Structures are given as structure tokens and as C-alpha cells.
Length: 252
Ligand SMILES: Nc1ncnc2c1ncn2[C@@H]1O[C@H](COP(=O)(O)OP(=O)(O)OP(=O)(O)O)[C@@H](O)[C@H]1O
Ligand SMILES: [Mg+2]
Image (cartoon, rainbow, N blue to C red):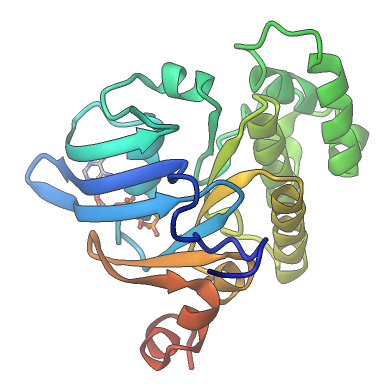
């Protein structure tokens, strides 16, 4: 047993929100993932860390169903108790999963507000306006820039926009692919502060990062990927102290 709110699964508690088993992915002859097992429990931040090409983005894209048509996938992905491996991305999104992709991928010619509204395009409920207002409270810079072309904003602002667009789908589970990529240290702090706040509000998050120190500081549990395989996993605080992890990923 662990303390409530520690985010560490407790024996006998609810089953994982997301459960990945023996996930293997090939792009043609290139093996991107090999027998990956990974669980995310409700309310946790779980981080996947690893170097360039380790398979981090492939993991997220395979879970959310977006991206390459040419990949060959084996294994099982269960979300909310339902097997989703063969489901199209839009159906997985409708179950409450939102994927904020690597490189933000905002629509550069569209305004900030248009980009945010795209995140809500599957919704038919009456709360969209209120949720848009809530995004503007969460990220005031987006309110200031609401009519500006998204492509003219800084990298950090575009990252806030990409997260805001994901939140406009009203997800229960958020996949974040390298939100800190290419951002100045001060902006990275803002992005991680936003991630902490989302967790405090009860959102479950799967975070992919190369900034291992930051990711381990914010996460409950972590998985380390090397060339497509999970080589280590455990409580983030333990991995942050592990000498091998520190040598390989924390630069100490
Ligand atoms: N569409 C694709 N076609 C062929 N190979 C691909 C494709 N996408 C990824 N790969 C390969 O699969 C492996 C894993 O890539 P992936 O993008 O998942 O890694 P990553 O950990 O996200 O890397 P990065 O830190 O650079 O974002 C790499 O060897 C990559 O070259
Ligand atoms: Mg990647």
C-alpha cells in the first residue's frame, strides 16, 4: 500500500485505465517497438523517457491510433477495459483520449481560437463556450492572441495552444509528446507547471520526454525505452535516484 495521492498503484485497487501488453511495432522491416508492457492508472502521470529514435512517439501514436498507415502492430492495448488496438483514432478520441503530438502541429494559417475550436469539433454539448473560456483562463497568452495566426506565435505559445486544443476535446486521458522540445528553460517551466495543474485537476497523463530530470520530477511512475524495448520501469522518484539511469539520462 502507498499513501493516497502518491499515484502509485495499490494492490487490489481499480484496474489500469490503460494497459499495453507485448506491443510490437514495425515500419516495414524496421522494428520500432518490441514487446512493450506499460500501465497507466487513473490520476497518474506516467512518463516514457528515452533517447532519439527509442520509440517514444511510436508508443503514443500506436496507443491513440493516429499516424502511419504503414506500420505493423502486434500485441494488446486496453483502454477503460476495452481492446482498442484495431479501433480508428476518432473512436479512441471519443472514448476520452487526446493526443498532443510532437512538434505541436497547430494549423499555422488559422487563428488561435480556430485551432482551439478544432479540438472540440466532435463535441455536440453546450459547454464548448465555457470550456473555451476556461482555456483562456488557464493560458492567458492564448486569450491575448485569440485572433492572431497560430503560426506567428512563439514555440512556447504554440505548445500551450496544442495542449489547449487537446483539452477542448474534454479528455480524461492526455498523451503529451515532448512538450518541452525546442523551448527556452523559462518556458519549459511554464509547460511543466501547466502539466502539474492538470494532474491536480484529476487528468491522467502519459508524458513522453527527453528532458528526463523534468519528466521524473513531475511523474508518478516512469518507463525507460531503449531501441524499442522497456529496459527499466518503476516509481519516478526511484528511477531519478538510480545510478544507471542518472548516468544514461540525467547527465550525472
Ligand atoms: N513512419 C516511419 N517509417 C519508418 N520508420 C519510422 C517511422 N516513424 C518512426 N520510424 C522509426 O522507428 C523508430 C522509433 O521512432 P520514434 O519516432 O517512435 O522514436 P522517438 O523515441 O519518438 O524519437 P525522437 O526522440 O526523435 O522523437 C526510429 O528508428 C524511427 O526511425
Ligand atoms: Mg518522438
